[in-house]
Amino acid sequence: MSYLIDSTIFVRIAKRNDPERQTALDALNNLRADAEDLCYTTQILAEFWNVCTRPTTARGGLGLSPQETERKTKMIEKFFRLLPESLATHQEWRRLVTSYSVSGIQVYDARLVALMNVHIFSHLLTFNGNDFKRFSGITVVDPKSITPPALQSQTSN
Image (cartoon, rainbow, N blue to C red):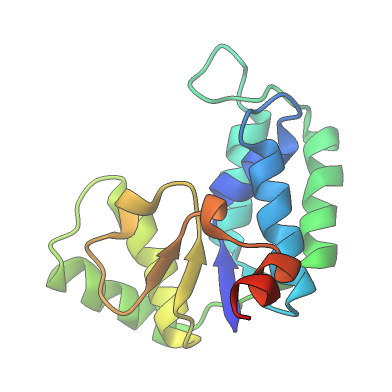
């Protein structure tokens, strides 16, 4: 199965003292152990870069330098697959924002859903599940719900 990994996951991992960091790492490790296809988009990387380089005095900012952020970004690019955008992505995004009457900052969430629809993804790993509830056809997965492979086999016996 393929999973789109939201920027909230990457940000938690980048912030060493984040209380959700280990949850994010465990979820990714468990999905990788299950040989799941883990992907990101240019938008997700842009959101990640924004939060990482935003000053710590600003909402959610990590205060990292562009050089530190570049190192972290290269790790994402190394271990996750980039989903390309296309004209079909644009057209699907336009359909979603009009069909669901999307406004404000949620237009970015609709863009991720458009990419998922075009690439035929159903699963989104995110800490912000409420942001995506309005959209049909996708399964929002909270990292806390990802069970380690060893536990999966024990519970199915």
